[in-house]
Length: 97
Image (cartoon, rainbow, N blue to C red; front, side):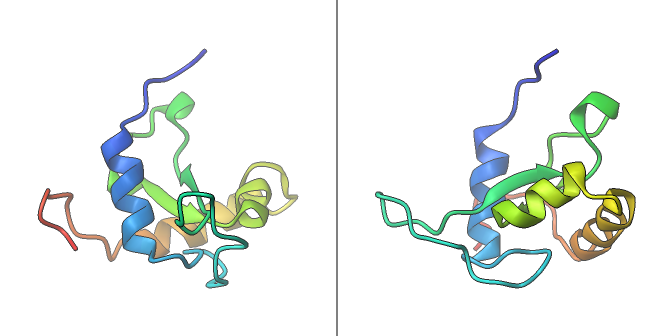
């Protein structure tokens, strides 16, 4: 099953993170060819489980944290920590910095 994801949500989440993993606080592992910091957008509550494709349910993470969120033994605890970190988020607006 595949899900349509909003490019605007991903763009906002990545911009909000400012090149720093929102889970481990490490800087992005590298800069892409277009000059942006490489982070991955992760849905804390998976879309397949009814999670929304919104900035309130998405977090920008380094590849290591992203894999851990999916495959680590303590993935449930990781998801809880990620959810706590995004409670601070404001609602998405086009003029958000």
